[in-house]
Length: 124
Figure 1 (cartoon, rainbow, N blue to C red):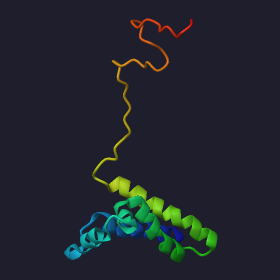
Figure 2: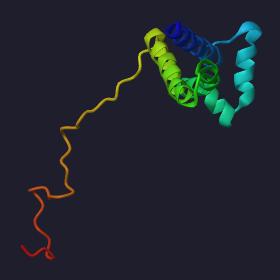
Figure 3: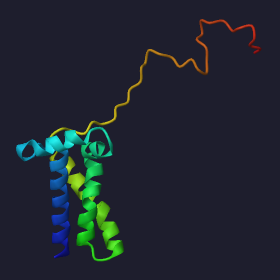
């Protein structure tokens, strides 16, 4: 029975977070809410799915948990479950970090190019 409440909590947090973060809502109410928040703390919070899910999970974890430790463990667990669900259902892939080296440029910080003669102040 308790697993049922955990799943219900994760789905509820995901649904509410997705509504506030990415949807227009009925009669564009949620869009107006997001634009009305501006660039301050609340506006940035509504722009970040992970941050918003953490805040939405707090009261749900408090309601579902029975003791202090259980509530503290449920809080990030429910938020993490909602984040995982978002990543699975998101249509836009998460960009992977890219790494490349420019093969045409030599690193001249520690050595001089061979064409350059040693300077007069260099004893060696």
